[in-house]
Image 1: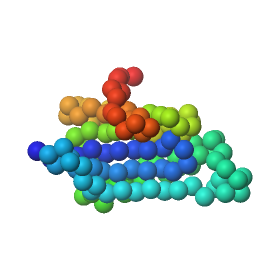
Image 2: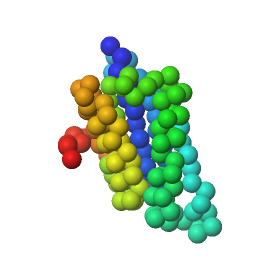
Image 3: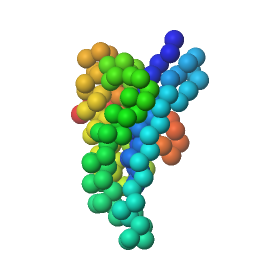
Length: 129
């Protein structure tokens, strides 16, 4: 059985989304989109507020492109994984809020979302709320 998982990553200054196909528990990348933020270069480092605002502007198009490149619609996903930490709190909140919104859309089909701690790559329960 093949499962399809959307992954969203917004822990710092890159907005990323990927669709993974899990075939016999072996992951195969179906699509990957990473949008790097060049706006921080002039400051010599990442400015957390600017990172959060840029995530707000780009997360929708990045996720849409990842799904399109995988040839999938939201209703065809079996789950959603979102980076929950560590990272910049504002940037993480953008990804978590967007991912939970998508998970709410798919929940009626029994397809729950998951938070993802990208420091150790273990999925943890996302909970409700």
